Image (tube, rainbow, N blue to C red; front, side):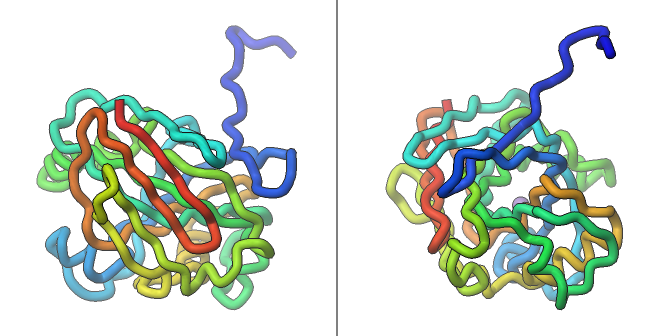
Length: 231
Ligand code: MN
């Protein structure tokens, strides 16, 4: 087999407690999945879950103990942080019932769904796709994956984000509108999940802008820290 040019390298994420890497297939994201965040975005109530994707190579993989860097992206004047629980799928499937969803989870990580909010808002207004606001290069920093059996009580974990040492977002995973299992049920009805898929499960309230030089520090109980500097 020969290729016209060198194929892109497989994007892969380190795993806590072992040397083998988690190879990434797709990145799915759940929209507006905490009530207080839905309200701050101008929506209310429990709407059916909806999804968007980021390219796998939008990941900024940050090994444990490191501070990653993401360049301030082009075209925006309003880059927002969204701290999120990331679910790593280890076993694929379609039409997965919520009751079976945890059998498909390999582990969990801390991630940031970085958003060019001004561009997303403009696309929403025009009824156009969000891709330019969500799926840009370096838009998905994440830390190492903790295998589920080492992650503790993720369902009730605290999730928070500080910027330059100041609190911006603080909530609990049990405030998800569509919980982890329900999100997998809905997502796998629309796409056949594959080992290597990542699901960014949504962000709590407190999203706001960062600028060059800011250091974001995210944390989820049991999953450690994610530190990223905007450069
Ligand atoms: Mn998000």
